[in-house]
Each structure stands twice: as C-alpha cells, then as structure tokens.
Image (tube, rainbow over the protein chains, first blue to last red):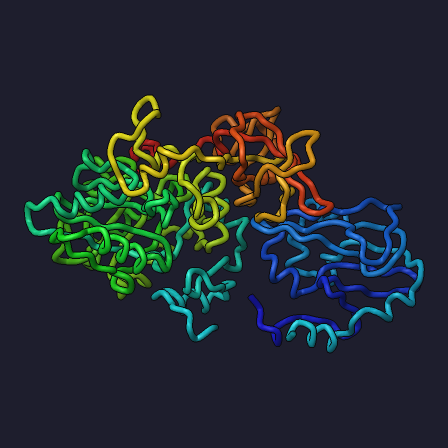
Length: 132
Length: 421
C-alpha cells in the first residue's frame, strides 16, 4: 500500500470522504475514484456503471468497483444527470488502477447545482482527513 | 513498515519488486506484485506461480526411537486418523478444542513412526505447540516450534515439475512414485531422507506434493539461507513459461475457487462440522460416526449444530463484502439465515450454457471469454441443497448466488504426476 506522501492527488481536483474525485469543466463534472481508493482496493477486475440519463442526488450510490477480493460502492459527489459513462472500463477495468484520473474516469455528470462542489475537499483537506 | 512486524527471508526481494505489502498474521507479506492479482491467479492456472509461505509455522513432534507417543499425541489431537498414514505421506486436517471449535487447520507430515512435522498457519506455531504440550500428559514427546528455523515457498501450477526439474538433482528419481499428498526429502542435512531431494548446490529440501490452490504443484521447505537463491532460480527457469511470483491475494482467490477454506475466515470458532470439507474429519463410510476418538469429537457428535457452511457461486464478477453485515436471504424472505464468510473472485472461471468452465478446461469452447465469477462460502442456520438460490444483500447492493458442491472445475492437483513432466 502507498504511504500518504506517495499518493497522486492532483491540485485541480476536488475529493470526497468516500475517496471519489471530481473535476469541473463548464457544467459537466467528471468523476472517478482517487489514487488512495484504487491503491486500497487492489487490482480492479470489474466496474459496475450507471446508464447515461440516470439522475442522482449528491451522495447517492452510482456504481461499484470490485477487486478480486473486495467490493466498494461509489457515491456521487454532485447531483445531476449522467451524460456519459466510460464504456472502455467494461473491457479494461485496470484503467482505474493504472490511470485513475485520465483513462480511468468513470462517469460525467451534468451538474444540477455546481455550488455543491464547494462542499468537497481540496487536496490539503483530503490529506488531513486521511491522516485522521 | 511497522517495526513490530516479522519478516521472511524474502522480504527484501518483495519490497525491491515494489510489492503491495500488508500485515498478515504478524508478518510483513506481499499481497500482490506489479503483475496484479488477476495475472498472478491466472499464471497458476496457465503455467505456474510461486508463493512465499515462510510466515507459516512448522512444529516438530518427536518421540524416542520406536516409541509410539508422538503418533498417539497427534492422533488424539488431530481430526484425521493417521493410523494408516505411511512414512513419506502427509494429511490435511484440523486441531480442535474440547468444544469442537477449530483452533487451526494443518498438514501433518510423517517421517517415520516416531517423527512427525506439523505445518500450521502464520502466527499459530506457538499456539498449536502449546496445545500439544498441554495434551501430551506424561508422554515422552519433544514438541519444537520451528518458526524461523525453516523457510517455505511453494510452486503451484501444471509447469511446476518441469521448472523444478532444472534446479534439483536427479529429477527423474525425485518425481517417480510421488502421489498427491506425499513428500520426499528433509530441510535438515541430518534429517530423515535428506538425501532424497537436493538442489543443484547440494542444499537439502523437503518437497511436498500438496498445496492450497487446487492445482498441481509443490510446497518446499528448506534452510532460510537458501530460499532467496531458489526463489530467483525458479523465476529465471520459468520465465519463458510464464511463471509469476504470487502474493496473498492470488493465494486467497485460488483457494476459494478450489473450494478450500481460509483459516479464521471459513473455519473458526464454531463447531467444525456441517461444512463442505468432509475430508478434514475422520468419518466412517456411512458418515454416521468417526473412525477414532479425538479431542473435540464428543462435542461434534453430541450436540446438534445449527451452523452449516456451503460454497456458493455468483452469476458474474459482482461480489458483496464478507461479514455479518451482509444478509443471506432465501427467495421471498427478509430475515437473514446466516453470514458470508468469504466472497472472492476466481478469475479463471466463467459460465458457459449454465455450466462453469475454467480457462484450464479441456475442450474449452472457442470464442468464450472468461471474465471470472464471484465465489465463496456462507454459514447458514439450515441445511441447503446444491442448486439452492440465495440473495446476498449488503445495503442497497445484492447478488444472486447458487449453492454448489464445487467451484472451479478441471483442477489439476490430484492428477498423476506423469501428466506434468
């Protein structure tokens, strides 16, 4: 497992208590699980995705990631409608391990209220949470 | 790394490879390497994998020459009947307390009538040694915890013998008459049968045709100073065949798929019966009694158990978390009848027209894409039949599973050695 100082946590992302990351581009938010989460889960063998058009409220479960031994639900960081899912993960779930912020993104959501982003953590706050 | 954790002689190698390490039974052990659990799991099914198991504990149980005390002590405490166990054979079973609860599962090795070795799980050497000491009464038996004095690594998968052939002296002789659950050699130069198996540099090893993956292979006991060379030698010799170093993740997933229990997870503090591992108890042919008396037998026999352990398979890779928080539901019911003990994924199996096939299955249909299936064990309060459907529900998440008698088909562990050399 990675030490905290080894984690890759980009400055331009926001983070949740459940270890998702979120990135705003216009009114669309791209969402995935962060380096800490993928490292803790180990090799991911399956990603359960929602469907485009599904709507969620902030904090709803929107899918799951499974490693050989563990399973972990993912919780949506922001309310809105799923406008795109990363279909490549069906055949290449390892993208979440190898490149969790680029090829391993999971869903894109059209935000209902972008101000919800303000309640998420920046890198420093997230690291503080991990340090307990 | 936590300074309190123990290390095996291969610890530096694991860390140099960038393995994901974790505390396991008080040891700093690799969960997986860069190759990942999936590839490590599949390497064992498709070729071979090696596992560092030096964290496991060995106990020597010896009596004076021609004395039966060592045999009697083990036979009184172990669940399997070793009356007919011949020298050079080993047997899987468990040690129970008086309540019939499992302290640990183990393999007993017989060197001769008065010399035995017991291999137990990480951190259990002292406890099992104490258990035997407490039960030996006045018997003249010397019980020695060999933790730290014997290293252990295992090679599992159908290419195991081919790879080992280039690293041991007289492989033709070693691999002759070596059935499943037999062993040859010794880890001490002066030990019984030490001349039977030697590495090319003369290092004696104990080579046991056993394992926990369900696949053909060997467990290897040797001097801790020799294990790094053997480990790297095996990796080099098996490189072109696709061998992989494997961590605890692959060991657990292979073991679950092979329908074998994980200690302190699938077996633990409940009566060790009504489980799918009949081979661990000394049942008579009609399964109505035991062939011998042993510690815990009365508790197993006298009280009806309300706990039954069954293997299950899921419909896909989807899993739930093991533990008491995941409900085990029968169709149409809302009250849980038990708990999930293990829920893992065997990456080497998949459904084909209602039947599970393995990547190693002969006549595997072309174009079939094997993605893996979740599998494991549930402990429930009633007897279920194979084919019974259950819903495992963890919060909003639920999966449908089927109770089965076996999980991964076409396993190679019991096949004749001639097939693999």
